[in-house]
Length: 360
Image (cartoon, rainbow, N blue to C red; front, side, top):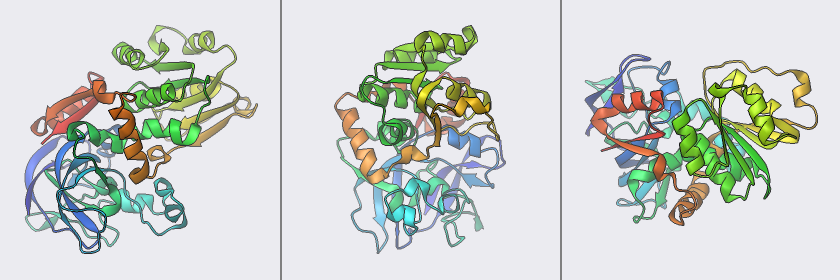
């Protein structure tokens, strides 16, 4: 079928809306008409080196139009959110840990299906896609059934897409991995969509001190509005001193969403004894280094992918929190028409918006 997609022609370049072709879903795949899709920092990072031409996007939501012959539990007409995919066969997938699938990179980041094919083409030539199981910067998606989560038709599809990655990643780091106790102190570095989702989750768990650290005053204002007890602007002074004033004995939990070496080092050094640091950010730094004394006293550093979640279980629970008013991420969302994808990317890069969502 002919679809509209935002095609990345060259690494680092702009997206262009084009008409391309999409094959029918395979036996274990579904065809989804995309209603909306969030733009994530991961899209922007991979746009710098993903093999082109390509279609990115991985925070999609929509309506199922067709299912493969082996698909069960999903039917045409179902409303769905989409998340990452996994092989489903390795010990980690079978043990309920698909975010750490042994073939995670192979099934999410090569631009092709596991057999080397792609459902996308243009003038008979292949287009790379299947990005994190979706490539949802498009009017329609062929996705593995494992990447699709049926949701209630009462949920606004214009909100739900980012739950599949950004919101789920931040909240899952807190709720699924770090699990701070009631009364704990938490510091979150980076007050974007992922960071604020972590802040909201920390408040849900009853943390007494929830500090947000950023260089963007507007983001810090939003973080405080949504539950942060403290906001630390790193541009206003030495953040170490500012954080020590908040937690003189160190924080119980730190979360880095930036992927920056200097920030992660600060996050680890801000911990108290037995403190735990969760690393969720994909950013510019390829290497991380620490002064060896900073990891003594029982401090630990944990890498976290996709909120360490089983999407089919965790995403509905997070949507229930949202429906109850305990996860009000709507305030982070700014919607853009699909045709304004490059304007949305620019607004996200500048920090003008917390979460850009494209509507189709």
